[in-house]
Length: 397
Ligand SMILES: *Cc1c(COP(=O)(O)O)cnc(C)c1O
Image (cartoon, rainbow, N blue to C red):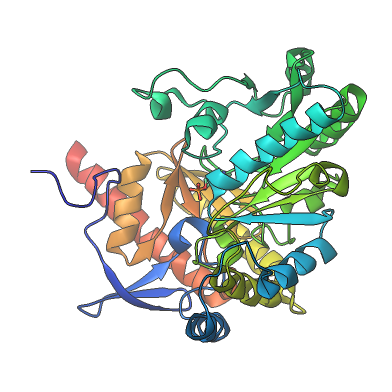
């Protein structure tokens, strides 16, 4: 008989009762080091006092009022995002896919209002992940995700990641813009080349296209800058954000330049829940922590140290780990055995990770993780590698 909870996820046989920092505890008292952070969501770790207090206090005052009224918490959060980014205006929603949907609408609307209503198509990259809604499935383009869900939504073209010539060749009179990730997370922590991203800006300017970055996973400090595109010195027209922005409270956002945002007049887009007082109280607590002096530097230095530890780990266990790649606190360890086996072995050592494509183990700890905890994670990975090696030897004997 089917479970009451629809079986769309293959779940580990574990449930957590509480968390503290980078640690999660089961009801029977077992302790796990959380380097998955709920899929790069729990930016401040678990039980962060200021985040918890902000949510509790706001929940006691008022949780939701709708966007029919002013929401001071949303205005404050938008002002902070605008003050610290390329953007002039922000729209709040509730998830990554929803942010990307809205982003595509805004790209089309901008083209239409500038007299190019024929420009509706978005160029995306192979290996992309943009979410699971009908349109974002088509933008993602992964055949496995599309299977059984009918005709993919029209309007999305795909080119190989990091290939500027192919992208240029894919532009048609119907192209509205380009949507890419700075680091493809879901398909295995693959970084965009500086040459590609800078070239995209030039190509978009040349053809009058919009440049959109999906920063759902890379935004909000994950790479050591507030947004990953800052590393490239490139100014986008619009970006989407989600995952870490609410520190675990469901939230998404679209950040746009005035040019793009100015076409989004009352009634043009909406969300019942988007930017409600509770979500924005969480968002404000998170961004205040991220923008506090030293926080992003901590992500950079801890991330760099963690990357070095992972590279050494890969050298120590060449039969298990092929290489480490990433930036800030988003790292991938490419595995030799099936990554699912490595994930399970790590789990047995009390370390939580996430898998990604290309047989990669994804390590995305809370952004306030300590150097010590990174060292501990590597120790546990090393123990997992030892067990896997022993099992492989045992099987071949
Ligand atoms: C997770 C993710 C999404 C989808 O976000 P949801 O909140 O699950 O809808 C979209 N794009 C990227 C890059 C992501 O990592």
